[in-house]
Length: 518
Image 1 (cartoon, rainbow, N blue to C red):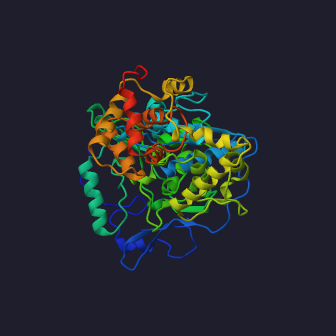
Image 2 (image 1 turned 90 degrees about the vertical axis):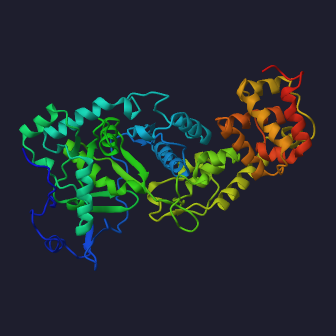
């Protein structure tokens, strides 16, 4: 049986070849077909070739139904980049009469967050871009949660092994770490050295019978992998510097690379519209399609979201979360309009769009290649424009039409009215709402909290965090107590406008003897 002693060698360079020999084998021209070129320091740098040609014509394949997917991982809140990906998929599907699918990619079970799936459903409904098929709606291509599709991935991984396109790897984490460190010291890419590819069938079988943990790796072919990206044009990668990607982890769960390719094929996805961070992985996916003998879908990789200083916008930033804007009660149509323009622009100068107009005007060919700056001041402008449009629509015929929706600012809401009771049935959570309102009331009575938007919002979030509740529960309860209805201005803005005495008085109603029963 072979020893697992570390042997550092390139897959496509004979063992024992010097680094200079490796560098000497790489083209150094700017013809644009190889992703690694030697630098003055002798290290290798990755620069995939994306030709400056315009995206290819024939965006829609004749006779093939357009099917797209938004495939988030349920690892937390939806962020602006995720909403943009969902929106672009929705717009493309609607424009071309296709299907828009939600698929949950939960193969990384250690990062899974309970309730994330329901959060996606809620935000997509809020934004007006609900999916056609998915976990809560079903469809002909389910299940739509990857952890419920494990037998499919195991079957297809086995098929690749049988075809010689993949192999089992028994290397320990310690050996892989040593290999990576050695590669870094020698200034070559940290690629797996294919030690386990050279195991005999008898050695593999012995390890399997002995219960040695293993993964499954794809066998990257030699040559160049090329594809045409709708946003970026022609892209090519030199396979010599594409790692033998792990397809199935030692815990039996697939990695994104295998699961997404298998699912996209079986769900008949025609166009993969996703973030730029997946561009470098796309050659692996194209190779997998070819190894399986499947048609390759069209790809469109969307630009990164950037802060005003052009640094990458992190998912962990508070204002990257869509809930951040929902809690501040931005209009859904304003946020959708704003997100549409983060990386895309129409042919003309129009900026204010309804969802129907976006469907008509949207095209992937007009998505920008460069990073897209997120300017919240622009969102405020969009929100103002959409608010003005609401105030001037045909439903407002006289002064009374403007006064009625804001009557609670001038007179106390009648919580016993049929309208208020209807609002209560959806906004008030028995027990939980009362607890949260009581806690907030206690804090407002004891602390001199400024009756302004930001301090009040911070206080609401703090109270909810202390009680392990979502802020939406408290916001809904406050809306009912302060306005007696389901709609109106932002809750914290309403509190600020009412002022401390009137806000405290209305909140105390929840605990008065005459209050409606909980």
